[in-house]
Image 1: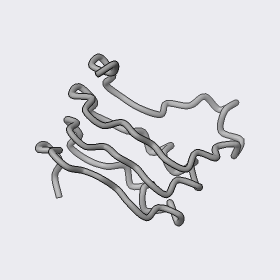
Image 2 (image 1 turned 90 degrees about the vertical axis):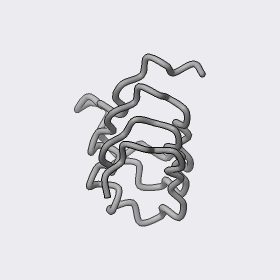
Image 3 (image 1 turned 90 degrees about the horizontal axis):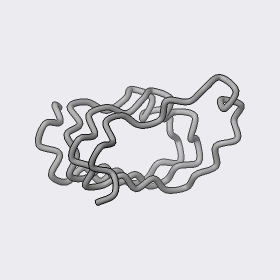
Image 4 (image 1 turned 180 degrees about the vertical axis):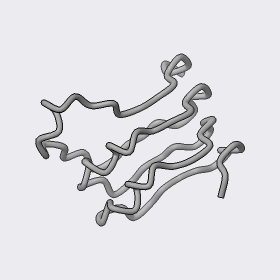
Length: 83
């Protein structure tokens, strides 16, 4: 995979936080070193699908609950994820 060194996701600058985020899907599967996702995930209000499978995530950002369009979250093989 091309993201083996990726350790965190979605650190946005203030200039980028103006509501222009229209992503519908986010695929970040099989990034073995991914340990955190910023709470800024909540800015992507149009997301309906997120695949975070096969990562080393221990927690999910609380802002994931603010994504009213979100229908599917794939967390297969996230062995370190705490419930």
